[in-house]
Image (cartoon, rainbow, N blue to C red):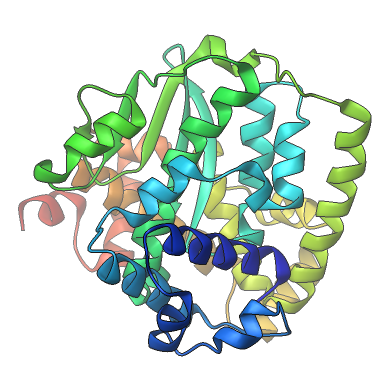
Length: 335
């Protein structure tokens, strides 16, 4: 696990100490060597161990919302260089956009997307479904942490007590009272999404600590870190993460995605084939996940989902959905 991801582990352990949890015991229960971590020695922490850290921290503190409250108290410094970029962005919208671009340096359990519409700008956290199922505690607590962190850290950057116009979460109604307090929303909508929606005027709210020259330097450093990580990550995973994070912009063509990865379409397709997948399969995987998500939310007609996913004809969407799931959208909804 990279240094910038380890920083989150240190933040988790520090917060656990505040809750009277022995970091040594917490590490032992999670299969980690506390002495090595305490000395900040070289340590490789697996995704399972991180998941176990969250699970055991929540259990030992008898605190199911451990991640939410850590996010409420955490400082930008915990994000390392990404936190510096956020702090030195020119506007709130730019800060969140940069945070979304570099979230993969911290976690691959979900992506973050920024979109606009209906006089709102929305921050969405988009799960990697398979990884979220494999590491449910890490996923839940990191999502909660991110929701709270976005709300409370931006306050200090713009010197305003931000309140979202809408919050959408998939949690049971009994749990929502504390989320309403932390996220400053009197009525949280229940749906299978993770959304913070703000008044569009905040998009261009200036960051008081903005320093454009410093930001340029930090962006170069973070990009280099991102490229180093990308060198060790399969191309198919990098593309999947990119598509997931930017799904609200539509699924690009093979040529478009190749341009985003600074390569030719032929070269990108060849590299994907070496990894046992095609770009069409990756794109279809994203479309399938989004189609199922939108249909299950109950907020959209089938023809609206078809349009959102870029299909000009409903019949084409129906054929694609049947290829993905073995059934039609109508049968899926009423099955």
